[in-house]
Structure formats: structure tokens, C-alpha cells
Length: 86
Image (tube, rainbow, N blue to C red):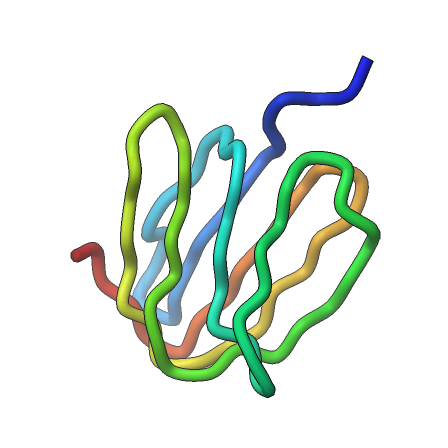
């Protein structure tokens, strides 16, 4: 049975911004936006300035200033230069 969520850690240079289980994450990748769902292929992505959206029981939104995202085996780590919850 496919997973319905994956682990997400979002952090900036200032410290952690959010951590928990997410069912979907949209990021502003360089060259265009990307959406991650449970079971997504492993990927390393450079991020642009923009809005990161997280579905985690409720919809969350973060303004980010670029960074990097890694997705592997239903675990996503996003490290941003700067970010804040909207």
C-alpha cells in the first residue's frame, strides 16, 4: 500500500521553520514549480525565491528566499536561505 504522507523538515539559517508529516509539498524550483507527493522519485532541487505550499492536515504557506530541497524515500528536507510562515 502506498504511503499517504512523508516526513518534511523545513529549516533556514535562523533555525527550524516547520517539521512534520505532509501529504503534498509545492516548491518554487529554479526553472519552474515542482510538486512532491508520497512515493516521489529521489530528487535534489535548487529553489528560487517564492512561495512554498505544504498540505499537512491544513494548508501552510511559507515565503522563501531560495535554497535546496532533497527528497528520498518519503523524506524531504528543505534548507532555505531565509523563510517565514504566511
